[in-house]
Length: 272
Image: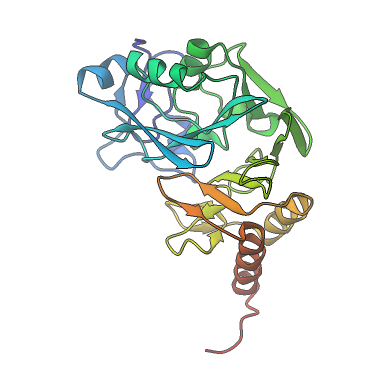
């Protein structure tokens, strides 16, 4: 496995040695309190990391590692008749992971919500001969340029039949979510990463420019995201971490959550 440097804090792999991680230097993330630290896929393998693969929903398989890397997110393998799409990304990849994913039908395409989840995306792309779809507005954050990375522009892109990327623009300008038209027995599913963050009360989501530094997202950005999602019905919302799922009435949960968020952001809440 590759010895290329991986930032311990965000889990993103770089093309070669460097002193800093620009993704963690940005105000939406942070440098670990012990300073900038690096690892590699080879080191993760030697330290005992192993795949963690488990069902998260109908046709949706969670993909992570044990122990978890970086900020602990898991990816999701969305299995459809039009092909398997890996939504979001994790850092760890080894032969056992490749074997288990291959037995599930492999990966035909990869799409990642935002730079904090880029992980070792090029390694995954090469392992499965799959393109990685990133919105062009986030081009500057790609830490390991590669021909497997496909930059797209505009508001929406259908990458497989019934699987559509939407540039919601929350958290990062290129922040994207994925809508699965046929998910949940035709009721639709939305894969949101933390572009729309499924919160601890899983009936709700929220919207932030920076989660670790508690910087709220701009109201105009939230409104734009809602407008772009309006044509897409969905019953379930899959967030970025294990079991962070809005299980029913997902589109209404997003609308209700946005109304609450905007009321507080604009100081338009009733007295308590």
